[in-house]
Length: 98
Image (cartoon, rainbow, N blue to C red; front, side, top):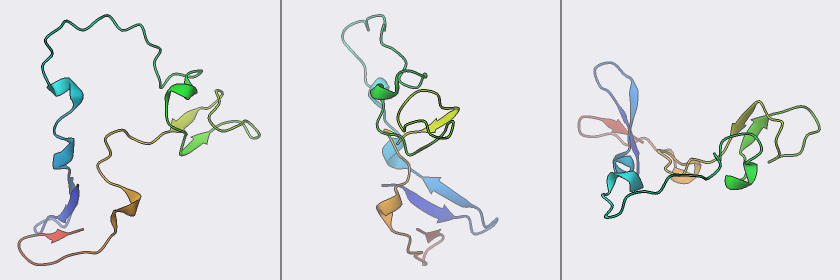
């Protein structure tokens, strides 16, 4: 799980997300990857390839999770932080932590 730390010298908050260090592409493969012919999940018209949108900028009256958007936000597959993670600030040691 990610940790949010406050820099004691500058006061800036920083996300430390050690779980995000490894990705599927970091592991070696015995076979050569085949040429990708899949559609881009982030391109207009391919909304069915992503999770349901969190929010989008689109013409008024257009249905959610449909094409026609200008900006579309979908959940991250490898999130650094989560909404349900809590928010209590812990003190002690060198850093304040959330």
